[in-house]
Image 1 (cartoon, rainbow, N blue to C red):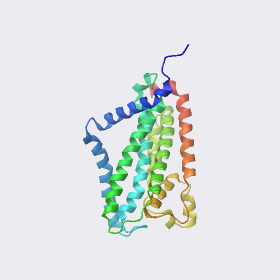
Image 2: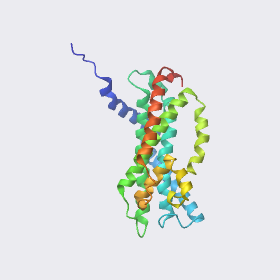
Image 3: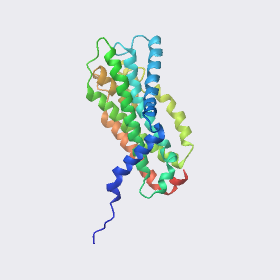
Image 4: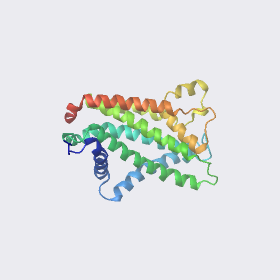
Length: 261
């Protein structure tokens, strides 16, 4: 006898799509104004900080525009950082959905990761396109390098965010601990400097920071590749996959406690 009940795995894409729509409405409202503000806020922040740093250091380490140099560092970093923060809070914010048998914790995380990624792809386009077009001599950009950077940022942010969500489900104070641990990351990830401009011993230390690979990949795509080949996509993907799998295993083991997060 054939079982007429639908396979839950076949419904998974529709469940995730519904969760993405729910997240979109909850975060941005039902009008385009909310989503426009979500784009305008980081774009405005990048513009203000770019102007401030340009006044302090008029000549950037790469290229002729400090705005473009800073944007190539902060855009992939913001994507990574927003994913880690948003995913860490996703299970707590949507714990009511976990009472439905068809909704799994990973569905919630994947849906929020997709929404954050799409939002920051729009931010990247809204910042990079006008800045590049405004330059008298735009650099010969490599779109594949830019795509690699954003893909690595999304993968690393999703992996780290999934792991953080699992740890926060076990130890709720992890959110505060992570906030403290994450503060120096902006400084040590190559956003305001380049790996190619560091002494060899410091560049060797920076290599172990996966976020630095993400930033350097963006700069390779905009300003041209580093002859020393600093970026290692397999290294970043290995860390992202390891964190994601570890987080998924922990979440599966704690699934019975998720409603009490």
